[in-house]
Image (spheres, one colour):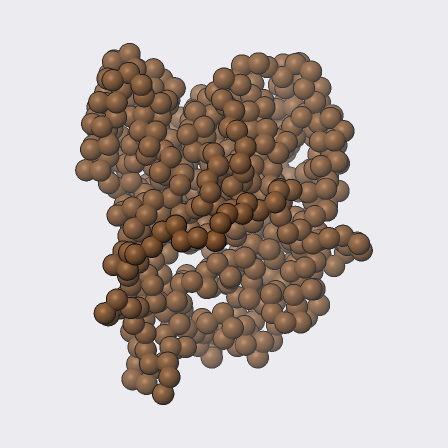
Length: 96
Length: 493
């Protein structure tokens, strides 16, 4: 399995949407590599024919009618927003 | 009644019903204790006015004569639970100022049963940590002390454990993703149970790793754990993984003894370099159960060694997905933007400022193991290993084992800051005896069983069959009585 270099660390930080200053990337790469090194023990296990676990308790998910059960509370939905205007969440311009 | 905050839940319930005590008196005693315990940094958002309002309402209900067991009992709520109108921020800067418009199902059940919320409790940020040192509120401190050092109460439910051990509340909610109820309980001489996955609703609990997270009570006795768990669990249509099963009367299940029970001792939990004290405690625990009439059986759980690495793939993977919602749009912190910054810069700066280092590390590990090219090698392989870990337990239970006895932690509480220079993997080793239980979805309980050489509490863990919390609590009750742990931390705070 692979170890993480500075370029990979930069790419992971980008995918995770976390700003990491360029001069912190080598240290981050080292840390992530070390943690992944610990996980490489998993390579020793014979998992031939084993199904990956999707649900720890053998039960079927409940179903319900596809109907609106709650709603009409825009003020409450927006009450914690850092920036809300005219009934909407406000964000920096997305489309030029 | 002097210092009623030191009562157990069972004692307080009986005193309230008899009229020897009011919930207002009991709540006031807890609020005074909290005010005097700033040095422990356990309660990070006290809610005294709300508490006294609820205490008065509880007294009215008790006087009317139809109050449930938790009515009038003051409890602390971990900051991971959303509580309506009260700060709920998972000990993270990114949720600064967040006041939910809703109440989590578990805290709502407690509220509806008449329990009195005293405030919100410290924890590791997003429940990621084993020492309560990743909190935006600063470290919670263990009331146990043997020298000048301030010790960790464990994590992530460190504030809950410290508050219960220091008699600031009669019980507290915790959550457990890899050991976050059981390890802090062991470090503080308290009882903590993580029920079977699906027993407690996860609705309204800030998500860390959804396939592993479970809420549970932290209390001073096993009986109290039974009473409080009863009020917390039950089916909830708002959580699709909540089990639609009847909840037995846990307290009524206590006292039937362990005669004829088969208790497994898993050989793989005897780790290299395990301190002699832990090994002795474990052997003593087995002797106590044997003396009480149980049969002690050596068992094997062959994939134990791989539980930690599997956990540290699966939990960060789920966390990276769950924590994607913290983007500075709907709640909490948003970074100040520079001229020309767009939405991507807003996300990246907000998350860099809002998440602490351990959370950032786990989100990035999770991102990596889920990324194209590595998904099969890490994430899918870890999920297959998880299947094997669960199968180990299934086979042992199929052989007639009723519960499994292990140490709760590899050591007693350590000093705050002592692990600062250690690499993250060293800290992860705290969970070595507890993560298997989350991976297999089983109930597990930590029971205080003795003191180490320095005089710090040590705990033992019992692991039960799925949905058999009643049997597990009964066995824990026998162990508790035999161990006779009555020590309390001397007040220094």
